[in-house]
Amino acid sequence: MDYTLFDQLRQLRLPPNGYAIFGSGPLAIRGIIPACNDLDILCRQDVWDNFSRNGVTKFLPEYHVTVASFFDRAITLGTEWGIGKFDVTELIDTAEMIDSLPFVRLEHVVRYKTIRSSAKDLQHLSALQASCN
Image (cartoon, rainbow, N blue to C red; front, side):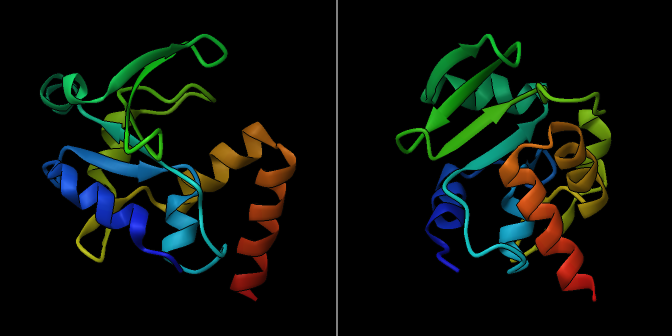
């Protein structure tokens, strides 16, 4: 596993109780998938207010969300998740700490990837299922 993305995230110095890593990151850190190309970060509004101005902000019309990107779009921060209905506060409050970083719990990742159901998401779900056997 290449930890470069996680090291870059640490460089941002986000408050640990103010965000959580979602998307494929929780699978990658556990070695369920080999690696991920980027990290999707959900954050509380105050974290967004303090950190988004340091990144490149962009509205993503396909998801109806605004994100702030860092490290050439390798890390994106947002206060909403554009696929499915998720309580961001709950995702952050129940995040699991791994290597001093907060990760959204796997049951939420499964729910998101099931809703999205892209070819990549289905592969990730299969890898997760295989890791449980």
